[in-house]
Image 1 (tube, each protein chain N blue to C red):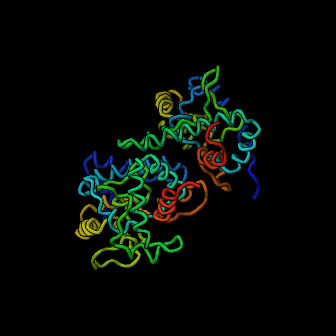
Image 2 (spheres, rainbow over the protein chains, first blue to last red):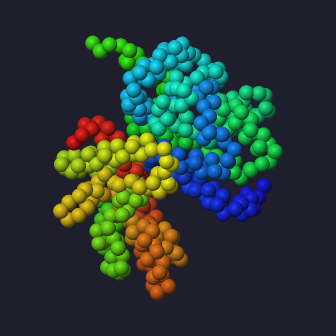
Image 3 (cartoon, one colour):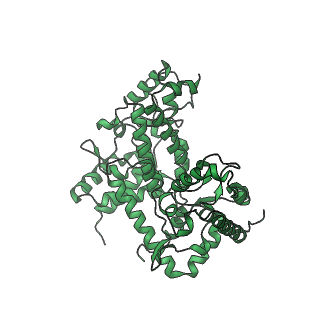
Length: 235
Length: 195
């Protein structure tokens, strides 16, 4: 496959988008702080959207919040989310806390029972009326969903579309995985698909960015601790 | 592993800057321009440099307090930007980042850590990225300066500036690095939010 030839056949606007995606990918590294990383990732996802207009995410779809919605977050990410929660109206905070408590049965001693891929129907308690209650400060895992590939197997294919184990899959909802893989297998847009980032590569950079040096924890556990503090009267 | 002679490298870079300014009076840096401190992201800083910067900061508590305040202001600004729905441009996301070390003085805006500023800051504007530059892009400098150099290249024939890579060789061989902002973030996380 002659990638240079494919690139040269693209219209100039598309070439520029790919150049910019490439540039952003090179700069999404440990030299940034978290807020910059989020902004740069948003800039990259917007360009990926223009290169792949069929991606349905901007239409307000929340399918990925309604399946396997059990992200891990770094301490600095949780700090932003906690601040975001505090800004919400008290009634909304209570509503979220109730949803968190109701779904906390999947946790045991601060960890998930089993693996994330065991929960195809898990719905994020931060999804309120089809919108993310903390969208502006949502974590990396949510931002990269729909706009990257992953080898982790946490969002497995819903049907037995043959893929060798460990091969990168689109990190998105089931229907997007099928749509993208079908396009790839039919030989469509091979160059454009190469510009989707590898989730694990970016996650590694983020772990180096994390100032505390501590590792990730399940967002749901953070939310449960927050919900318990909310409903416990101050002593 | 020998510790790099950071003060020696800093002095070498300062000498190179003075020589460059002398040889090429049209260079804009000496005018006190600090565009690169505001529009080029945070400078890459090596661990052995930070080992000198940190104690210097502790020995200058007023300066440190100013940097801490500006750092928190920068964070607040970035978080406010996250709240805005419009996607940032490339430059806004990556490069529009005023260094918290830039402070307002009676003489204008100055680098608050000038005596211990990183090698990246000292070598920006006066080093080459390639040995025989044929375009402004081969010069480690800001865009307006690149344009100026490119205009003068046909008249100059060659540009007698040191290679950036030779200046950074010992640091790059042995040392880890972060952006200065990353070092400040870790260091200031231990202190109070407001000065």
